[in-house]
Length: 144
Image (cartoon, rainbow, N blue to C red; front, side, top):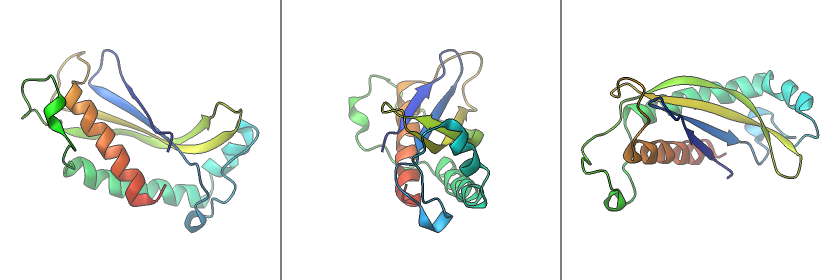
């Protein structure tokens, strides 16, 4: 899975892009590789993709409310390991995901914002790792 996680430079948020790399017959998303972005537009407005976004919202809501444990928190340099982020879903939508071989795929675009962080501070290392674990668990639960 070519999961991409991009923290915002001066904001307490992170963008997560999850391209669909295999067909999802349960959502009527059979042809996930397309030659042009315009071909992806038709997939993003389909009922199957809307159903995928709805299911994603449900799973993601559960994951941000009950953060999965970090696999190995001992390697972080942050001294305060008790600082657990309080994420909210700032954005959840479809995305056109280009690949290196000029193939386009539909995907999910998620922005998580930490409500605990005030001002224009970026997310810390632990919050970013929580976001990564959330994204990986989301992919696993939805079978992406």
